[in-house]
Amino acid sequence: MEKYEWRQSADGSLTLYSKEYEECYHSVKDGALTEALKKHVEPAFELTSKPHLRILDICFGLGFNTLATLYHFSKQKRVKSLEIFSPELDATLLKTLPSFPYPKPLEPFVPVISRLIEHGKYEASNISIELRVMDAREYIKTLHDIDIVYQDAFSPKKNPSLWTVEYFQDLYTITDENMILTTYSIATPVRMALAEAGFMVYERSVKGVKKITIASKKSLPLLAIDMKAKAKRSTSKPLRDRE
Ligand SMILES: C[S@@+](CC[C@H](N)C(=O)[O-])C[C@H]1O[C@@H](n2cnc3c(N)ncnc32)[C@H](O)[C@@H]1O
Image 1: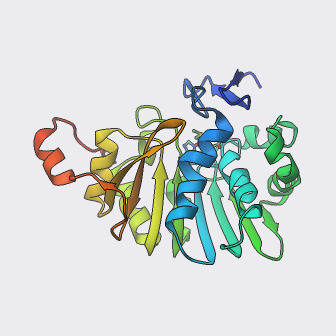
Image 2: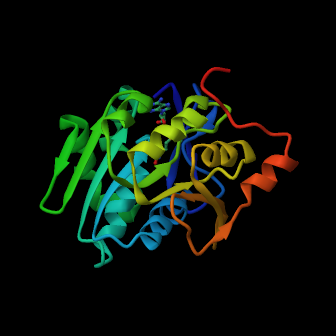
């Protein structure tokens, strides 16, 4: 565990600080479990109406977004079945997860993590999860008809390849027309990259946590950001692969 340090987050759940990326896996101020539920899982479920969801979790990390999805799924009735797809580069981290001190609401799902780490797959009657140790950029090219993307890489400064126009163009290709993308990043270059890839961009205030960005292909009943006007006013530029 010498690459990581423990961090206590605001809602009491523990997260890690990565010495390699010099960032935490979650917002310590918002709380790790709160962030997974309020910035990703709850808004995504609320804005989709399908009974079967195909979810892309970018990237697995400590698995909070996948586990919080299982928790939320178990508490609701509308969505009947789930498929989750998640890439992760750090095999060393994954091996430690079965003994990670997850917060109480996620504890019932820890056996799922153990199975995923061992077999790369978890299958139940209405849930299927795939965890692949590989680069997200390559992994996403194997997917199609994704309904929800949890865009939860480290920051654009530290993890640039997962925030470029070309990366978001690949996400555009593999997502359903009613898709929803959730991200904690409200940075203008990120929003510009999403817009250039063809997505509509929205801002959402969420009680108790920082604002988030939502992207979609179809219009949503949310506060839309006028990206054309923003691009004219701003000196920011979206990230691109070859820079
Ligand atoms: C902010 S953390 C993800 C937090 C995660 N959602 C959670 O709940 O713990 C970002 C993760 O992306 C992984 N990562 C960074 N670049 C990657 C890439 N190109 N492909 C796959 N995983 C990558 C890192 O190893 C790290 O685990």
